[in-house]
Length: 210
Ligand code: URA
Ligand code: SF4
Image 1 (tube, rainbow, N blue to C red):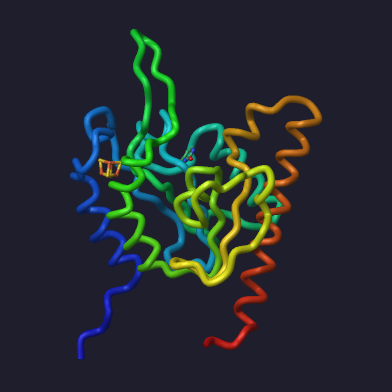
Image 2 (tube, rainbow, N blue to C red):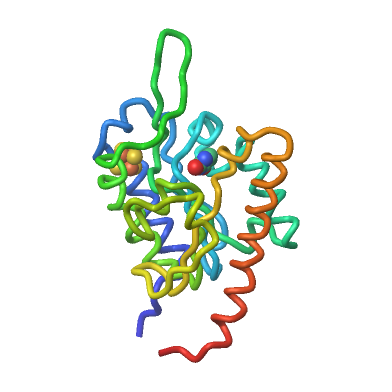
């Protein structure tokens, strides 16, 4: 009997196909498709918004300033990228070009819808116990539309399509735009939301499988 390919092998096959995707206009301005990375066997997955400049240049998720902040908040929970998997709702950078300046922008609903062809099988292969959506575009896509981040972050949503436990946290790029006490408070909320996710994994592992 042939053995099932591992999650890592299945993801690599999917990533290979995604690297030549031209299903939405973001294909025209990207340098690299940023598929996602981390531990495919991890029970905990973070889903962000989309690649920024550094991610586009390297092909790796969350490697810029926002990524550094995410790494710090993981480390404060005694976790690293070895313990989690990280990806985004869109795999190519969304930006506006005005002369020489290039600014990130939020991905459009049509771009998110097109990129579901990758996110859907990606999350299905990993089938984590817990998903943490980073930012509103991710929460809107994976938890429910019209997600109100400031009112609903840290709440738990159960029996989702891709995970039995889902929550949303402030996006690290949003946190970086806050200043002074507001920055400290926002950063602490991400640390706390990651802690809650870590504890939720432990609880979910104890619960009997239905
Ligand atoms: N912001 C995101 O949402 N995703 C990344 O990969 C990097 C920054
Ligand atoms: Fe394809 Fe997604 Fe990139 Fe659009 S953002 S081109 S759907 S990989």
